[in-house]
Image 1 (tube, rainbow, N blue to C red):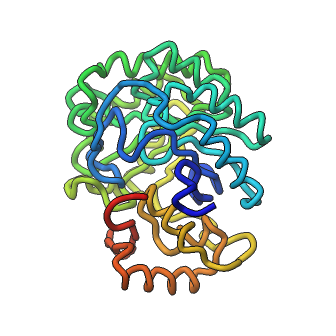
Image 2: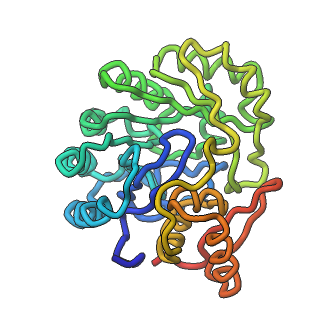
Length: 317
């Protein structure tokens, strides 16, 4: 199946949080309930809370059935991609039917903005792991950082996170994304920690900017500073910012498929090492293909510090 035919299933993706996962994209590019200033995918083009079947469920499952046998050594199937997955009205059915296809655990990466809706909380119950986020301790900074759709109320959002976590009965890993000079002040960290201690997630994962953000003023917090916040949270806390651990490629190192590389870059900016690790390819071969793709302007390069990230140029297919 070509890149054009794999419209909803992509990867595998190597990440600090989930190891090696196969991604499932349930909504169109940048269809989201937030427009976060730090988003690595750029500005949200369709900000909404409208839930509907954005992608046909059968189409998603056909792709997954074809992709799974091609992709050994996976840790998770992850519902994430390039928008907010809980906007898909059939996400609960998708999770249940994925579990009929494979024994791999299903993880849902969500901004958590719709968990105040009972139907969304119920839809996520079949998942094995849910990874929501909370980036602010106050309504003011919630709007400044996440720039939510107008229907989303900060207090309702936090309440939904707590309600879901208390009744889910399985792991919830809450990401707290911190930005230098914005939400890393002592008062804001204390406010976030107070909400987190009410939500009671299984783990808290402190993160910061590691890929080119939507807004240049969204700057990373130093890892040492992130570590200093760990004692403030009454839960198991991981600092997940920084380099991928185990960054060498794994698995069979076959022919480099430009389509697989582009499908990965469609969803998020990646370094050459990210691509090699995710797709199980030799870094030197990936580097050669990136040079060729740059020469045809199929991809473009962006630098963040000393790291070079690659994204697809122009319209997505």
